[in-house]
Every structure is written in C-alpha cells, then in structure tokens.
Amino acid sequence: MNSRVDPNLLHELKKYGAVGIEKCFNCGNCTAVCPLASNEYNFPRSVIRRAQVGQKENLKAQLDPWLCYYCGDCSATCPKDAEPGETMMAARRWLTAQYDWTGLARKFYTSKVWEIGSIVLVSILILFMFVFFSGPMTTDHVALNTFAPVQRIHYGDWVLAAFLSFFLLSNIARMYWLSIGRSRIKIPLSVYVTEAWKLIYHFVTQKQFEKCDEEHKGFFKKARWRNHWLLVSGYVLMFALVVGFLPWFQTDNIYPLWHPQRWLGYYATIVLLYGGAEILWQRIRKENQIHRFSHPSDWIFPILLLLTTASGIMVHTFRYLDLPLATYYTYVIHLMILTPMLVLEVPFGKWSHLAYRPFAIYFQALREKAADQSKVTAGALASTD
Image (cartoon, rainbow, N blue to C red; front, side):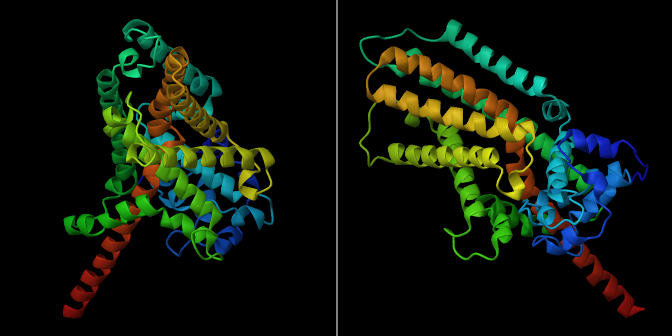
C-alpha cells in the first residue's frame, strides 16, 4: 500500500467537520473508554494518528470509522478537548467522498452551495415534469391518480431505484477495493458465504449501535439505539412501499383503518416524524456531547426528512377531506422534497451510511475470518516441519 505522506490530510478532514484534531497528543484515553474498540480496531486513536501523520492512502483502507456509532464518551473524557468523536464523524464523511467516483459527495460535504443548489435544481426538475406531463385536474372530487397517473410515477420509481442502486453499489464496490481488494488479503469464497448473514443481521437489527448503550437493558431503555432503529425501520418501510408497492399505496380508494395499507403507512409516518424531530431538537438544544458540533449535512438530512413526512401527511389529510386542488399541489411539493432527498442523500450523503456501516461490519468479519484461517494454516505447516 502507498505509504506516501500527505501533509494536507489534517486540513482536508477539517473541511469535513473535524474539530480539535490537532490538539490530540495520542494518549489513548478515547480508545480505552470506547465500548466498540478492540485490539485490532483501536479507534478513535488510530484514525486520529493516521490523519495527523498524513497517511491518506492508509486511512482510505480503514473500516474503523464505520464501526464507531459516536456515543460521545471519547469526546466527553478527552483530556485535551480534541473531540475524537467529531473526528470519527468527519472521517465517515471523508470516506464517503473517497468511495464516490462521481465526486458529488465531496462537493456536497464541503460546499453548502453545491448541496443546497443541487436540492433546488432537482426540485425544479420535478416541478417542470409535472407542469408538462401531469394529467388533468379533476376539481369536483379528488382523483390523484388522474392528475399523477400511478403507473407513470411507478415507472419513475423504478428508474429512481435503478439510479440509487447503481451509484450506491458501485461506491460499495469501491469501498471493498480500498479496504480489502487492493490489500490483497486472500479470502476464500466460502468465507464470503458463511459471513454474509452478518451483513443482513446488522442492517436489520442495527445491533452494533446497541453496544453504545450497554449500561441499559431492554429495548425501551436503550434510547439512542431504539430511536435509531425506529427511524431506519420507518425509512426502509416507506421506501419499500413507495418503490415496490406504489399502485397499492397510492390509490384513490379509501381503505378502512384496519387495512395494512393504512397501518403500515401510519407506522412509517409516525416513526419518521418522531425520529426527524428528535434529531433536530437535540441538535438545537446541544445538551449532549454528540450534538455540540454540527456539520451542515447534519441539519439538511433531518430537515428534508421532516418536510417529506409533513408534506406526505398533508397530502393524506387533504385527500381524506376531499380537497382536490390542495391534494394535487401538495403532492407536487411532496415529490419536490422527496426526490432530491433520495437522489442526493442516499448515494452521496448521510443516508449512504445505512449501507456502508453493515458492509463495514461484513468486511471486518471477512478480514478476521481470513486471518484466523491463515493462522490455522500456518500452524499446520509449522507442525509438519
């Protein structure tokens, strides 16, 4: 691996939100108090040290930043106020930009003009599409599927899903190359298969996050993990309903309250509304260590999420009140918020972390399993000499 020193790496990480990283004198306290660190993954200390000495290529290969869920203990107990937790946050943003071959993630994370301008541009594009391609407005009753034909919108969903999948999966492939591929670690095919369950398990349960709340027992007492899991579950459910089952979900029929279409939508709406509002409220209050500092992306993501949820609630309400024009106009606004959130945040912004984290845990398992098998092989060879 290239060991060339890049003296600008420290300043580069500051553009991604690192705070106080130059104050660290590598005492190791942050690693000692971290419930997720290990002998092999001794973060945040290792990440900070690589940044300080300019090991850029080495840092690109690290999985450590994704294995951290920022409980705040490292920053709260740092004797130099070097904010190691914020460095880990910045490293995740920086790594997102390294994985992204388009360069858009770097633009979004380092320039407010680029991120906000891109959101506005995509919103205007959606507005123009409705101006030129929407159906007629029925004004004597709500006919949403006449104004916005569900099959057209559904085809658009498939195009959107293909767009997101292509960019996100290609970035994950680059993540694999940087962390495992170019290091030439020999991993048997069987290991990829036997360890694949960890990828699914950690995506579904977000159990790694739970370790940051080890002193509490039970789902309802582990507040941070619980809220995070609820938010993720609501987002994934809503995404599945919109992309996979839109003809069933966007309908002019009014189903009874007990119908799955109603209560699944209500569950997703409630947890998204609660999760987005809770994130913003905590960042406004700044009472906890993890909310003392905020990167612009920490605000844009929950704001878009809340606006998407709120506008969706309004569409639902106007539709049930049988207010045609209010329903149609609000529906357009809803998609003008939802589309840039998905197009920009999922592959290039903060939502991409939902994919990178479980893949990092999977890649970590591949490394560890391959290392264990190498030791066994080496031991067997030694015993025959």
